[in-house]
Image (cartoon, rainbow, N blue to C red):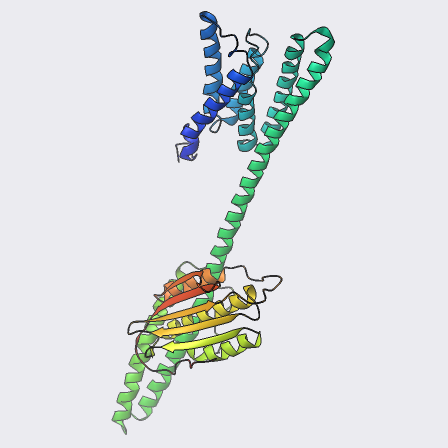
Length: 405
């Protein structure tokens, strides 16, 4: 940006600006004047070069100062057209200046520029008629006037159309960013509520274990030791989930839906089989495969893995439709779990997709909070593939999802 807040490409002429100004100048000199047939000499030549240079210099500032540049070109063209011996009638240069005004200026300014060009067209028509025999002057006037009005009108319409298209593209980009931002904020709030339930469960376990240990404190020290071990493990898990919840809440809006306590257990990989059955009922064939030795996942990571599979399968039903085949693969490694969901893209596509495509943006946010990463790309089979990599807390424990076909 320059000092006035404009992009740098608007602050000074570029090679494209110079080339366009030079091209318009050459067109006017060689096509809309008698320069190539009757070259002036001496002072007349230098005067002609000076006049052309004024128009050329004005065009170099057309993007930074479109209205001012057009005004200079218009005044220059009005003064040059009737007062030269070379029949010089600038056309390309006013067109370039008019297009710049239509593209960069407001509607009132661009409409004023179009009316000014109409005046220029009338002046050019009268000048052309003056050089014709009396019997041909009327036809020459109307023909020249019609030609220039059409040229200026088309140039102005092209500039306005380009401006409206650019504004529409900017509006769409702004709306896309706002919707993506809202999707991320909504996902953060949802994550916070889910982590709240997880932490509440861990604290409940700690309270129950502590109460049980207190009852048998004198009679069964071994059982007390086991209870303290469970309390320590649940406390460590709760602290980890609290850190993730604070991360999720750091940039979120206030939760207006209450305290977020739902009382329902959060889903995990153990629930993928039920999810697959639900998707299969919609006509999508899902094949699951587990590779490697399953490890232990933190509750929030287990939930994130489930959400990856859920969102990917939901997108298949929305965008690919019944008849599609999907492969869900869980690849366990000592330190990480890779979840991959890929479809073949061969379903009976629904007439209307109901997704806003912001679910993946929420997944990226969710995985970032738990220390994972997400990639979404076209699959070699012609469909789409979603791959998530999640951290593994340690060797095993829970029952992994079973292979399903």
